[in-house]
Image 1 (cartoon, rainbow, N blue to C red):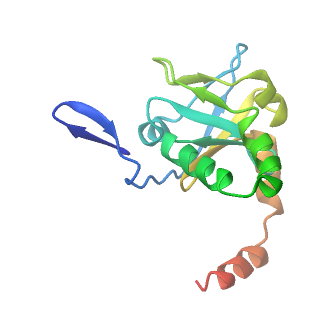
Image 2: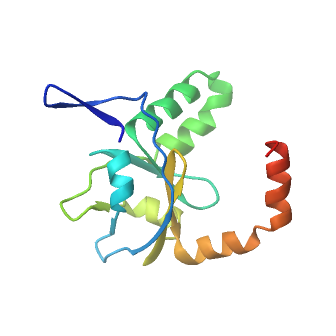
Length: 157
């Protein structure tokens, strides 16, 4: 998904919508590599981006989603954009899964998200997130049905 074929050539088509869903548990090996779920690799493409995210996780973005983020931030006045530019772009890494589907997470990103061994890969619509498994469990335990109901009311669902 996210790619189309033209006369045998694979062409990235940013107009194709991706939907990353699900939760997968994996381990980081001693070299800092982690397996990206195969369903996510299909949607993210051969190369994609990992950067600092919100709530102490890492964001994983396809090239098309990375471009959208960059365009939106760059369209803002520098006085408002500079903090976002520094946050998202300074520590970002372009990654490419190896034959086993693993990516190398740079040490500074592992430190930011407190990733040591057990991680949760989650789908969050147009991006994936990488969480320390214990932090993901704690984040979910803090969500209440009332908070979700309020958010659904705002969306008029």
